[in-house]
Image 1 (spheres, helix red, strand yellow):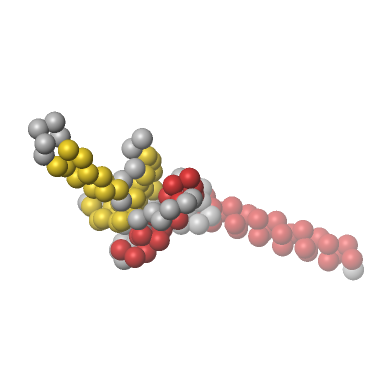
Image 2 (cartoon, rainbow, N blue to C red):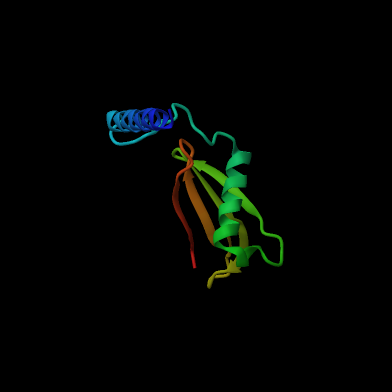
Length: 123
């Protein structure tokens, strides 16, 4: 009886493995289908800000130690750009005042699937 049970189990496992492999090859070698979203995954500005801030903190922790860092997010051509805000003023040689409003660290990612396009620093 034990030998019969063992043989049945071996056959069952063999059929199961063959079935899984057949499904994998039918899907182009993938066990799971990659589904592309029909709509944007990151639709809300608040969500984009949270994702971007988390990525910036992970990659540029020194910017977040110490003083408060102001982070801004803008939507541009199907992407979110999240960056730290710097307001610097200066005076040109001819006496005119200029203001720089931009960021030193930034991350840009897709609204459609959240894929990071670039992350970096202007320094």
